[in-house]
Image 1 (cartoon, one colour):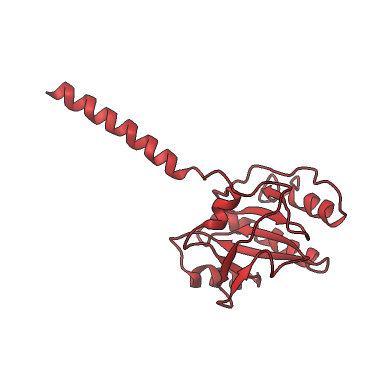
Image 2 (image 1 turned 30 degrees about the vertical axis):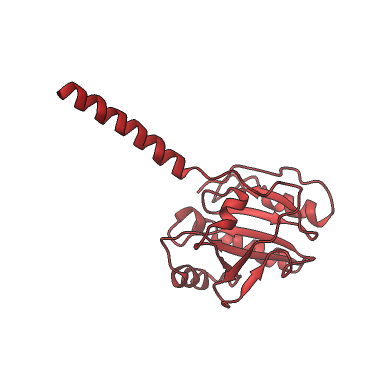
Length: 192
């Protein structure tokens, strides 16, 4: 009897572990690099209005950043994100935040963004996580870029290190997109 119980318990633990692993893996993305991004519509937490990534940002380069209130890695990028906003706004690049964590409120992420002087739109991805699943994001911060004609051009990390000297991935991608050149690294591994 004890042996059967141990075998049953061991089997349950293995199946449980497999179930947990499958829940933590991101679904295969619907968006494909260098293809049209698709039309995702979500509510802007700041204004309460629905925003369409296709029509509301038509003709603009868009950088989306998956951000989370309770993520230390996200906030280690605060200065780099602030500088990115300042450097690229004058070049016509729109930077938006995407909030996908169902464990945080709108007020928490908005308060965090306001206290850190990051006055960008915040798309509410919590209800369906459609945008997170569309690009295959599974951590924050994760960055994605849509070009002026609506094609998905970059996915991944800002750079290879949250602080100090680092190799940038996002800025060269943006510079290439703005110059109508091929993106040097289209996809990198996001970490957070």
